Image 1 (spheres, rainbow, N blue to C red):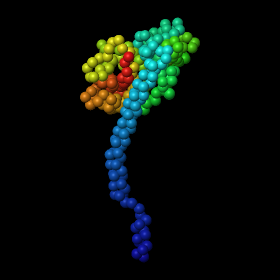
Image 2 (spheres, one colour; image 1 turned 120 degrees about the vertical axis):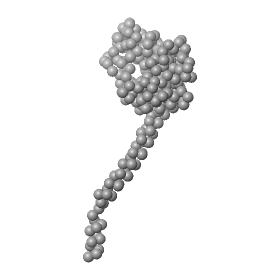
Image 3 (cartoon, rainbow, N blue to C red; image 1 turned 30 degrees about the vertical axis):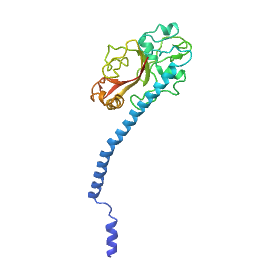
Image 4 (cartoon, one colour; image 1 turned 180 degrees about the vertical axis):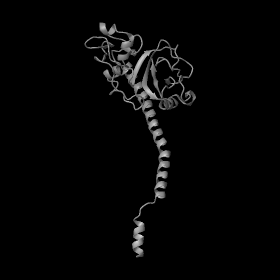
Length: 251
């Protein structure tokens, strides 16, 4: 009889109090470990961007050394985007800037093996709009379109590499890649062409951590504010995101 009662007690399972205690312990553990997991993922994203920038510097140096080149970077934003073809050349600077990007040049010349793919910022990898994409012709040192027409494609919402004439009159946070204060105070030379990485719609915390890592402690921005110093520049985040511009080189 005694053994039978023991078996009944053993088969009753956990009490409500025991279940509550287990759930409470699990909740505490999740609360402690989850933020660390997010921090680890953010650190990995920041490191990926830093390594990508290093690889892009090498790719651009290799491009500048190509035989038959002119030792300069083609502009892909603003004025002076090199084009061939009456319709393409006659298009507005904005239309040409939206369609052209430095990725195209580096991919066409074999300096990049594959298109950019970052885990930070927008996860869009295709241009918007209709019509054909413009391509880079190294022999002409110009962008072309077949058949020749006004570009309708738009890469402005995609992570990409761009190049444009520096504009030291603008603060880096609003220059859209045209100016960086690498030492914290000095603007870029107005006669230079600056190459930079664009990361659209980057989460504010990622942008801040990227600036802290790549700019260094002395040039780190205030979290939640614009960044105007160092190799990373961005405007103050709005709705939790901001477009980030990362300096690669200036020629």
